[in-house]
Every structure is written in C-alpha cells, then in structure tokens.
Amino acid sequence: MTAIRRRPVRVLLVEDNPGDARLVEEALADAKSADFRLTHVEHLQEGLRRLAKHKFDVVLLDLLLDDTPRLGALLEIYEQSARVPVVVLTGLEDEAVGKWALREGAHEYLIKGAVGPEKLAHSLLDAVDRGSVQTARPGAARGA
Image (cartoon, rainbow, N blue to C red; front, side, top):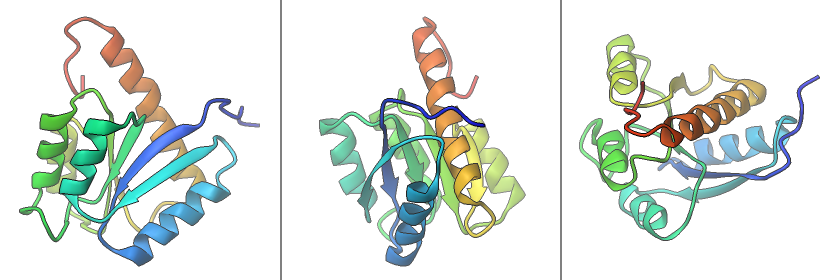
C-alpha cells in the first residue's frame, strides 16, 4: 500500500486543450497517493506569471501550446524558474523529442492517453522528491 503524502502537492498544469486538462484533473482526483492541488492555465505566458507570483511543487507541461513556438515551452519555464521540476505530458509521441526534453531538464516525458492516474501521480511525486534533492545540493545541475 502506498503511503499518502500529508502536505498537498501544488501542480501547475499548462495545457491548452480543455478536454485534456479535465482528464488530468480527474486523474489526479482519483490518485490515492497524494492530495493534488491543481492550477490550470491554457497559455504559457499565464503559466509564467503564475510561477512568478505563487509557489508550485511541480509543473505539468504540454509541449505543444498555441502561444509558444514548437518545443519552446520547456526552455521558457526553466528560464523563469529552474528550481521547479517539470513533467512533460504531451500528445507528441516522438522518442527524439522525449530524449531532448529529458536532456533539457524535464523529469519525465509522458504521452497523453498512455498514462493512468497512479502513474501520473507517481511521476509528479517522483519529480517533486528528486527536485527537492537537486535544489538542496549546492551547484546541482538540472536533470542531473
């Protein structure tokens, strides 16, 4: 049995498809491993504003957003806030892009429709835990 995390996990979801955002919200509500507090924005610029004003434990990011050049979202998030771990959740099933995202610091590259609630929850919790360890180490590199 998985232990339930006591402190809520604050997730910033950057997703421009309302249907996909609803599915993520439902998946995290069904997850039993933690209490997820989801903040959803549809545009990267709004996500960057939220990151500047509020504390989040993890960002759940779609790479293909209407307001962002192809694949630029991950780099812009890290320019704004390199200490917040990012999990990519995208419909882009491309191994080369997945490897690129991981090299650029994403903690995980997940494909929409191929991930259940517990896998999504585990990926977010793992990113939060690994992100905490990396930021606690002086000079820790992203994605190390």
